[in-house]
Length: 337
Ligand code: PEP
Ligand code: MN
Image (cartoon, rainbow, N blue to C red; front, side, top):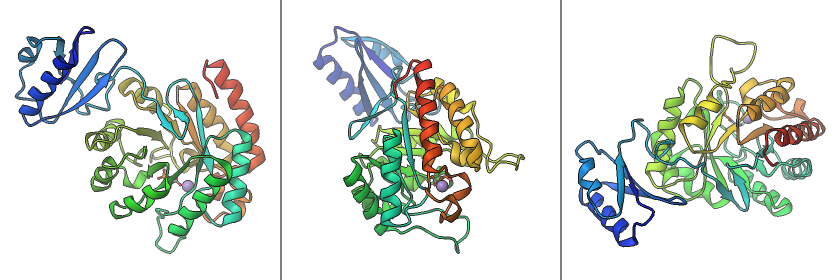
């Protein structure tokens, strides 16, 4: 349920509503809009009576949120959420590109790639230090050393860094380094992990699970939000279908659907969405045309020698060409980049 306060409501009116809600053992999420403060009620609101709030001073109305996800829904918050990561705005009119290698491999690799993607206009540096690999015999990432190298690349370029956290026990360590915590597709429904990242303040980048519906994804976002972290970014990265020409089937529909259903920023990942570098540019453009707030793109100086995901990685010069094309597209879409 959300309780909409009148523009004339006083702080005391809001406080009275909040304490009444808490009196039922429920939690609240306050969102101050331009005209109205909205009191979002979290938890099982089945027993609450709308009319008992509507008679309180300063209350304009109370409505039940019809979706199973609450805080993530547009009903709960109509304005787009904009997340500020070290001055980089994610959501809103800015289009953000997060780029870098699939895995951090060495100091020179991450620093050279960081400088190249920054030069081309990327605003966030990506790189995996803990890799969720399908095979236990594949490279698992450099671990903490990889986090240190990412921090060094941030120092050199000034770019914020995004990196994956694989398990709940690693959240404190990864949070010490990362500006954005990535939850990988394989972990989208790892509820212990979602709860753990919900309890920190670092923004969370939630990738769609391989066989998850859009609603499953929003329910996972809700876990993070309900635990108190309101900085959640959604990522469409392709799903498993019968089609096996591409690594995954990029669900372009998911972008406008997520934008309709939720106020959270939506990012497209054409690298994992296709698995083939030749398809990255067209699907990147399609993502922006469909309304994405940005992109995550894998870049490697020598894709043939990459320790993971070389086949879908762009060389830096191809990435720079794509970025120039995307800037024109962003302008045509009335967005800044
Ligand atoms: C990645 O970003 O390198 C990654 C492992 O992505 P996903 O979880 O989408 O497969
Ligand atoms: Mn990858």
